[in-house]
Length: 463
Image (cartoon, rainbow, N blue to C red):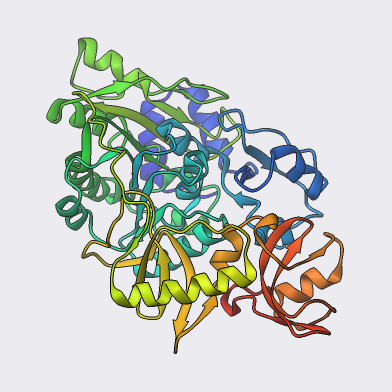
């Protein structure tokens, strides 16, 4: 691969000759693909049996695996459409793992799209607590929403705002914040040739300014005693070690050591840092992944703790209610639908946006004045006094939650026909029916007696 001369010169001066040659040679090697199993829906061993593969585990993520099976396309497998796993570059699994989110906490993923780290965090939170997930790009937020819905997450509030606006809404609110910042992307050169073409000599300098601005807003939103994980997919020390030095000198923070497992190694403190002594040593608690040393692309991850005692205000919340009279009317229509089609559905706080009905996540008794795309579980549409369920609702439920189901084996061609939006010839009891891969819901159909009218969302269909 042809790399920019100034990029090569920088690392020639930073590395020993032998390591530099290994580093540059790695860009001509094969990239490593991976996937992470959604254990809220399926145990790891059952997913691997369903896919009929025996992949190598990713050392830093118990639910992650390397994918190198050319005869199976994981992105086209029906199990993908059931939200049983997420395709993710292996090194990108480290930041959310380092965040160590817990069920019942308030967590922010500030630069979230397309959503790999968000759904990983949500999986670890087990849909309990509040996960605010943001991206400033309206286009990228659409992909974020789809991935959240496929994975069956119901505790997310998906927003499309500037960090500055969120800091005004959420001062000292979050227990944990993931800050996977926009960066120069040097770590993605092998994976994405466009990253090489768009790279310029001053890109890192431009990114540092943005990264420090974003970090300031994140720090404002973090509780005392809370955790920020700062990560990039670049090698540049200006965006990594030197930024961490800046943060711990400016803010009331300390580095919390991450175990350099599976080929990750400690950050390189000697790369031009000005601080010395204890602070310099603490920077070794951050980690780097190098493509010439481990099976993954370039990544830097640092866990920082805001000094102080964390407040325990994560228990006060309403358990049911409505944000408006219109939401109450829509909820009544939903409960009528649920009584006919679902088993033991648990309610909560209902919110109506346009015709869309949402069940809000924990710690949200209303929706703040921000630009948002999804608040909790999108139940469906309320129109002219009637409720129509969403694909999101089907994917958030389990097999036993439905009163009517039709089940197809993984090799049944009806599964592909359904995912393409075709009507299926299938007899059954009239009404809304969940179409399942084995015991895993894919979406809704309307049983008319001798056939299933396909209700799979048009924008999700296989081409």
